[in-house]
Image (cartoon, rainbow, N blue to C red):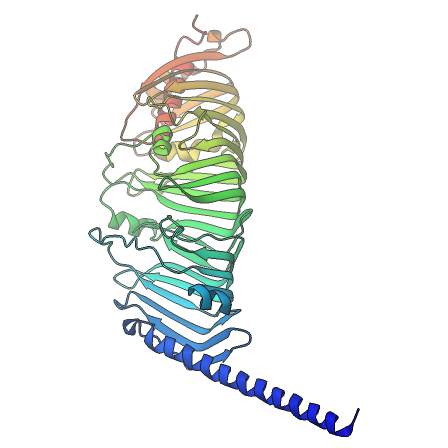
Length: 512
């Protein structure tokens, strides 16, 4: 190639390269200017957005802000972040239709503080459809935090160490009118500690949480009363249980949550509760809460959501219950240990019965089973309970009986079976029991001695072995009217009380 031609090509190539560099520099300067102008003019002044630095890359469609602070006009929301980076801006949709299409949005160490306020029921919802389309391939949050404060600046909700990603986000005039005004694809959420105030008296908390479209889980979950037992009694005017629930692990499998016909729904294949330990305390020295207590049929039926849980598995559970009946006597507990339970077909709007099967140890020694079923759609709130207790060393329940019934027992319940069927107003059932050397001791009111007359009368009936069938069982029948200001478990308890009294002091033989 002639030397002159080669030189000319080099000059043209160099010129083109210089032109491209100048065009790139110009485009970068223009892009940066446009971004700064948009931040200055298009972000509403009342939002009070500040940042320390903005950097851009026109070729990558990238915008990055550092040390961001922003607040809403009413001061109810405050936001800060170490950085916010937007990348992958697509110019063609923007130039053709004004649509915003982005690759990634990444928030590093964001912190959102929300101040709770009363809902404005007079405000009208703005249903104005957007003229543009918005899409983002992926939104990521790294080491985020969320805090909700009430009007006295007490914490309502906290969530820390939040790592979150959400993909395939689309927002336009079609999605704007939905309960969730955008569509999305896959998501991942991992957090550290969280806490939420359920009410003025109770809160929930956990150490970790994970959510994906397929599974969800919580570790070291707690539901507790905010106050000590004594402080709770000082703060309330009627009876209210003091709760202390801890669960090592909660797992949800194959779950779906959303809205349908303006109604939230949660459909779940399986819920697993590992090692739930639940301590319940009630101060009976306070006035009764005389409001109507719903049976579980109605409680589920009245929930404003579509709930369907195919299976709940409970493993290695413990429940204890204490009642304070006397100011100067510390209450003893009734306990069910080694609880293994299965709940099938729990629903609010579905069909069929809820079936609950429980295996446990009463006072940590007597194997106890309970099969309980009810239909949430049954307006009469009917239910069926069948249970059994075997090889129960009755002395183990004496601390509870002594403080709650002023009585003690001796002997072994070899086998006890009962069936209870009922509804909102009344129930009936039958019981049969086989026992060895069973003996009641009725104590004096001060608990310092034995009421010999009542003890003799009770044992006259309970120790009479002539009133048993050929297999050694005594039989009883009972009927109970429900106290509608008491819970289902109180209803169950008074049925068992009536059954025990009739079985041990009645005819003994099975009625035809």
